[in-house]
Image (cartoon, rainbow, N blue to C red; front, top):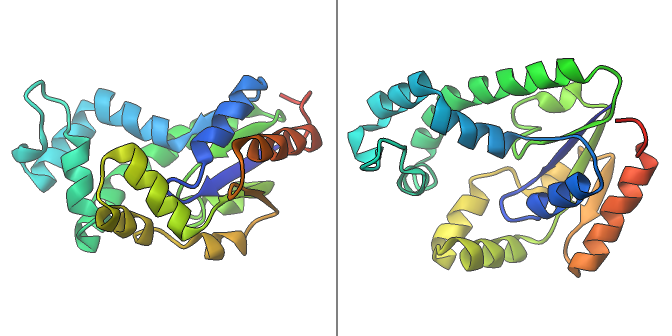
Length: 196
C-alpha cells in the first residue's frame, strides 16, 4: 500500500514522518532524496552549476542550497528550471523504491506529490495541514528567513487548501504537537501497522 504524504513548506511533514519512523513505518522522504542527490550526484550538480552559475557553489564544492533557494523562491522561472532539472532524478529514485516495496505499507513524503502527478500512483493521499500564517511563522522561526521571504516560499507552492481537495485524509497540524501525533498514530493503525 502506497500512502502519499504531502503538504506545504513548514506545514509539519517532518513532524509526521519522524513519528511514522518512530513507530517503525517504512518512509521515503523526497526532500531527503533531493538533498542526498545534491550531495552525491556529481552529474546533477555539474548541470545545476552550468545552469545557475559557479556562484552557487560553496568553497568545499557543495551547492549553496540557501543561496539557490533565495534565487528560485524569488524567481518563478528559475524555480521552474530547477524543478525540471531535479524532479526527474528524485522521481526516479522514488519509483525504484516504490517498486521494491511490493505489497507492504510505504509512506512517501513528497511536498509536490500532486503537482508532479505522483498522486496517481498512491493508494491513499494524506495532507498535513496548517494555516498559511502558521506556515510563514514557522518557516521564519526555523529558517532564519524574513517574514516576506517566508511568505514568498509558501506562496510558490500549491496552497494547502487546494491540496486538501485531493486528500483521503487530513492531518490537522493547527493545534498542539500531541494532537498532531495522535492523528498520525491513528492513521498508522488504520492503514495497517503490521503490513510493512
